[in-house]
Amino acid sequence: MLKIGIIGCGKIAQVRHIPEYLSNEHAQIIAFHDRTRERAEKLATKHGGKVYQSYHELLEDREIDAVSVCVANHLHARVTIDALQAGKHVLCEKPMATTIEDCEAMVVTAKTAEKKLVVGHNQLLTPAHKRAKALIDQGLIGEILTFRTTFGHGGPENWSIDPGPGTWFFDKEAAAMGAIGDLGVHKIYLIQHLTGQRITEVTAKLTTLNKKGSSGQPILLDDNALCIFGMESGIVGTMMASWTYYGAEDNSTILYGTKGIMRIYDHPQYAIAVTLKSGESIYYDLESIQTNEEQSKSGVIDTFIESILEDKETELSGEKALDSMRAVFASIESAQTNKTTKVV
Image 1 (tube, rainbow, N blue to C red):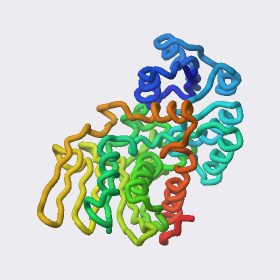
Image 2 (cartoon, rainbow, N blue to C red):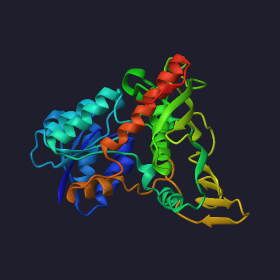
Image 3 (cartoon, helix red, strand yellow):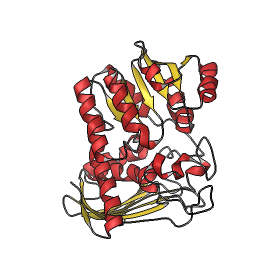
Image 4 (tube, one colour):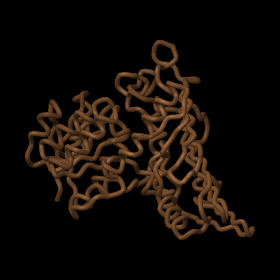
């Protein structure tokens, strides 16, 4: 039985990490820390476990085998590295960190400490994305030529544990990046996984169209990100991440191949809809993807626990996340310079 500590007891911890640990027979949550102590105390009272005044005190507990890092973006690297050096396996929320140097340092520290580092890129584990990957690898739609992938909803202020314009997601110091880091990184990770190719160059437009902070002034982070990606083989496609989709959440991906088109989470009824060049249509009725309003088991916790118990790397490892973070930072650079940026 792995003993788990939760560092950061906000919304993502409460609706995804904690319930999924509780449903895993190989995990037991025994420790909580949050900067708002009352929040941690409520969870400890509800689920059992000890509350720690600081995350450093929590990491000193030798009984704890692994931790979930669910703090604000700017703290991901610091807390993760401290946890790894304290001998804990780490599941870190995305985005991995706020600089590529910090991301790389996290991976190096995990290797040195011989501990697992997993990043919460849950989209790879959804039923439709897993099936789509298998169908693509089987050649159902032929060679992929282009794609369009989107992730948009009404914004994190509706999701945050402290809802409203004062959410840390709108604080440039705490979040460091907006929709590109919150939503775009998911689709960047996904499209590289589905195509089996790295993003090698990006032309991006990051902008603030509508979101305002507590002062009533526009936030200093992007609430919309539009990127054109070039892949290793010459594939070109687009990615849209938005906090201003004021209606149904859009989490769709469309792949255009030499033999047909695959729509994932785009059809009103079917999770995957394929239209072949021959005119044949194929539909796959699979579980719907998670939304902020409708939660389902992501599989991230189970993958993390399995990676520790079986001592194996997964598609969610910190090392595999590096390519996605490089594309995120290249997108930010492209938007700032108004130039196409190589991903290195």
